[in-house]
Each structure stands twice: as C-alpha cells, then as structure tokens.
Image (tube, rainbow, N blue to C red; front, side):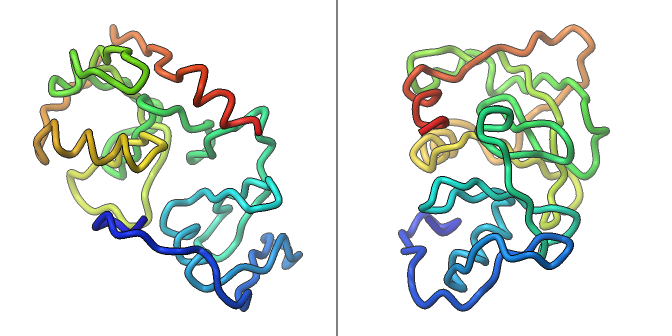
Length: 174
C-alpha cells in the first residue's frame, strides 16, 4: 500500500538490485519494490527472505526471521504495537502515549500506552514519531481512532506488553 492507502503491486520488471554493503546481490526486484523497501526499511521477498536497510538507503542485509521476525530498527528487532521511530528521542527510551492507553488492538488485546524508541527514520523531521503496527489494516484503524497529535511522556515505569497475537506469530515464521 502507498501511504495514502491505495494499493500498489510490487511486481514488474526486475531492474533494481538489493545489494549488501559489500556489493553482493541479495535479489533483483522491481523499482516499485525497491522504493517501498527503502521507505519501510524492511521487506519480505517472495522467496521468504526478509531484508532490511543496512547503513544507508541503498544497502540491505538479510535478516534471520527467527531472531527478528518483523524487521530491525537501528539495532533492536521491531515489535508490533511497541516499537516507534523517532529522531528526537533517545533510542531505548520508554514512553507513555496517553491516546494509546485503552486502545483495543487486533486480537482484542488492550494497549497500556507504553512504547519504546527502537528506530530512527530517514524521512522523519522534528517532533515526529512513526509507530510500528505491522499491518496496513491496523494502521488504517489506528489513524481513524487516535488524533494526529498525541501526548508523549518519558517514563521510567512503563511496562512494555506483548501485543503479538498467535496469528501474527504464525505469519512471521512462515
């Protein structure tokens, strides 16, 4: 999906190379796939190989899907409904987002408002966070539920919860 919610197909002529930092080819993909993988930071190839941006937007690494089933942040594995990207807040910071507290998530879990800064974003600018929800359907639901501007507090007492459902866990290791 594009950021505006319109569907795109990640197919077409495979003209772009997903390269490692050393220049080794991981796979050839369409230009659309390449651009989407750059924007999102992580992508799953039809072969089952998961790739992630490496040190810049033009180099990729293969991920071990057992260790990092949802992708990799700046050094931590991403966790749905927990990980956020921020360029303004120290990595590893625990945050409380009031507008998430009590939010009903897929699988009927209830969010406690606690999140963690696990990533940075090359396309983020001042006072912006990017919340990792894994599925576009969940993103659409979230944006329809909470406002664009949220209240964020640094918290040393926040307790990170596990919001990953069994169906998501099964999808992640296919």
